[in-house]
Length: 228
Image 1 (cartoon, rainbow, N blue to C red):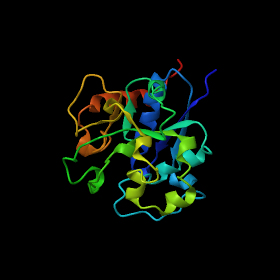
Image 2: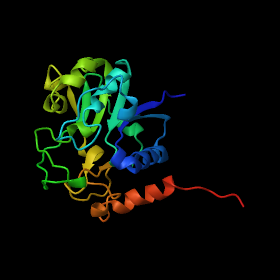
Image 3: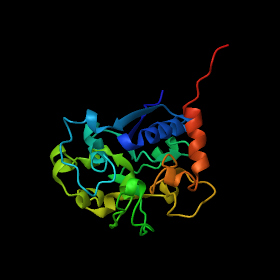
Image 4: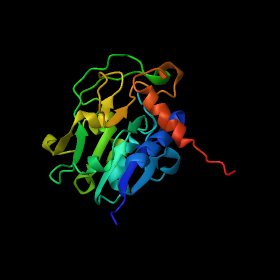
């Protein structure tokens, strides 16, 4: 039997349903066992103690970089923001792993269209924006991400991968694995949809691109079969 795929998902009390819908989307498509770990700050107090930054749009903005440590720097793991759904088998993403890389990401090259996003959060703009929202970690090569470093490094040091000795250690994934809804045009076959401006669970974005796809998974996630 295959070892479970280790998938860590950002968890935020303002987007609880997003976490569960993402898990459902992965479960429906995965051809291999999966092991979900929510990055819920309430469960991470032994490992994560930095104060929240006013520019953070989610509770997991920085705790995502704990993933290699939490797996003792062994094997491969996937981090995903919660405001996503998987449209294909996530095992396909793991099959793209390159042992010569420390981390693999979708290398977006864009400037956000809006100055604000969900819940009135400021839309920060910086180099490598959204690269860290999907990260396939080669954990053994990420030992620079110690508890001390994750808790003290600046946001840009973390999100711009300054913890790597060479940018050549950042592998590239096709953009379809982190398709930015509302920033990119609709395409026929996205692999992971990322509702980066705000998910359909927020009133303001209930009619966003791909809202129907998200809602159909939500309905299935809530399914209960009654016995007659």
